[in-house]
Length: 84
Image 1 (cartoon, rainbow, N blue to C red):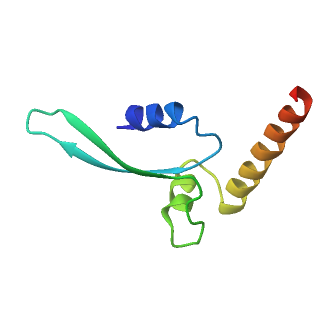
Image 2: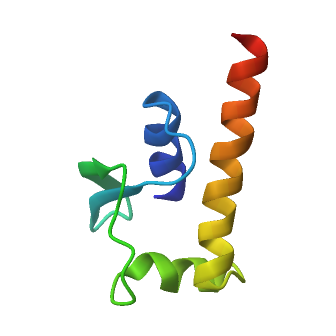
């Protein structure tokens, strides 16, 4: 599943972060089917949303995660300014 979601992100050229909603179907023979529902380029960032729970599993606090998003945007903007 993770490989499929990564492929979707690469095909769509997603940079930074996004939420890819999908259904996962595991067939009786063990085959896994991933059905993409939608890509949300700006998922909600309230304490109730799962994004902060997921980032916590990677060792980030909510503030660390937001700082990473801002730093990514700043660096991407600086690259675009130099190249453009």
